[in-house]
Image (tube, rainbow, N blue to C red; front, side, top):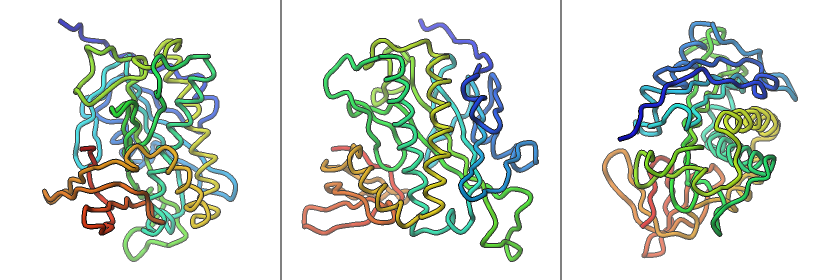
Length: 301
């Protein structure tokens, strides 16, 4: 029988040193929901985006009682074992709502997360205990290891109180994007929520304590979001092309036969051959036709 783990307020000294604002609680329904609520009521504020500068706020909890994933899925996590963080940033409304480039915001969140995990592993001198143990991204929002889900990402757009809405909205206004990142860092095999999930400690030896891992990864994510989003805001089209090449190297689905499950209940099967310029997935069916997939759950066959 598994013993219930007690939640404790996350201690994040390294993250606090680099973030503009950190909110840490022992338990909440969802860090994304808490961040959205606090932005809406004005208790969490971020300065306007300035050229070359970007504020990043962090909302962290040790336990989520109603963690959310993409397309209404639940995210199950355990205190003291799983990192549940949300990162809030202000970016120009024109970029956040431009469908030709805004798909790359989710891809940036994935790359930031891979960079943070790999950087933490290197810092502590840890090493994979199995061959071919690299971390990858499963389009559009999962972190994968050995074909299993190690983490998930969820992004949400929030209109801050200072911005207009509807006809009052100004294209030059900033909006806030909240990136929720859930990572299984220290789950044992017996605590994995599903057979399709995994945990970092199962594949990497020499890791520090969970608390140190969580803080070291979050610190790097704050810095990664700031660096990558500043570049993206300055040149969305140019960055999209370089991001496309970068994602290609870590795209788990690329070259695999996959099945896309759409929200209307339909499916599409084919080979994932790459990403379009707007970050949508290209799926080639058996008849040689290329299809564009923008919103779907994608699983390997």
